[in-house]
Structure formats: structure tokens, C-alpha cells
Length: 252
Image (tube, helix red, strand yellow):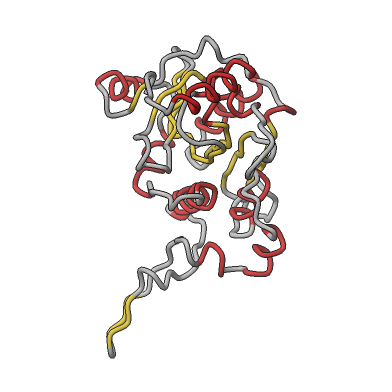
């Protein structure tokens, strides 16, 4: 991943964006399915979210990284007690026999609680706030934070606090070009954090591009701060997502 082959103009563009974001000294990025990546997951200080999210790991359709991230996290919270809508995709009805499953998918994410979803996501821009709203409309407690209104120290503290609670997750919206990856703006959940190396494991929902990858927290934060005007370019940052409290007050 540190030596991604891009067309000459794409390489130049990625380099210019990376330098502009202060990422000229980008640390090594390595895949989870490498020996180094697997070893780091085994020893990571905060790995609980990986085991909660990985059973629901999805591959996005192009341009659907935000909704796909929301589906993964909602299903992980479903396993912890968050209610899910009936999935017409996975439920079956044959004559007198039927099986009904409550499971979040790319259909009921938009159709369940439709009024709330439409009000929060129309027109769709794929923004940090809209992805958070997709989860809030379905009962989760989702708090979006713009990176330019936060700090690396605050981001690190948020991750450590969230990952010490198995019911909390963190999703990020970042500029791939700052990390010298193919693409532009992208959403994905974080699966783990290692305090000793100060690295995060990103469960990249564009699995046709990259397996899950480890990156320095500082580089990921720089990628969240990066703003390049253009197609689907809204302020980036992170979303902390957890279960609502039983009395109806959001846990976050």
C-alpha cells in the first residue's frame, strides 16, 4: 500500500494534496492480511470493535461508502440490543413457510423511519452529518465531529474511550489522496487501535480496492482535515456511535 501505482497525473495530484496537508512524511501503511498487520491486531491495546464489526463487514457499491459504514455499525449494535427493521432482502416467504429477519441492509436503511431519513439526507451529499443521521434515525447515538474543529489529542482520546466500551464505535470520513490511496473522499469504520504504535485499523468498505489497513493515527487525522473543493467534498471528520441510554437520553 505504500507503493500504489497510479497514472502519472494521479500520482502528481496525490503528492500535491499530501504535501499540502503536511503528509510528506507519511508513515507506512500495511494491510491486516500481512504478517505485520495480523501480528499488530493480536497485540493491539484496543481491538474489541474489530470482533464486533467483522461479522458484518460489507463491500460498498461505488459511491455508497457512507451508507455501507452505517449498515455495518447498526448491525454491530443490533447484536448488542439495538432493534433493526425487517429485511426484505434476507427474509423469505414460500407458500405457508416464512422466515423473517431483522437485519440492516441497503434497502431498509433508507425505507425504515423514512420521514426522518429523508429529512436528514435530502439532498444526499454523503456528508459526515448525513451518515451520522442515518444511524441516529435508526436508534443509535451518533455524534459527528469535524476534524478542523477537533484535534489529534481529542481524536485519540475519543477512540480510546469508545473502544474501552464494547458498545461504542468510531467511523471516519477522510481524503484518500492525503494517504496516497486511489480515490477521494471516503467513509469507513475503525476496527482497532494500538496505543504503543499509535495506529488505527481501518475496515475499508471499498474492499475491491484495499483489505483492512493499519495507518498512523496522525496521518489519518491529517486525511480527515484535508478539504479539496469539488465532487462530494464536504468537511470531514469522525463519528462516535453507541447505544442510547435506556431512559431515552443519548449515551454520547
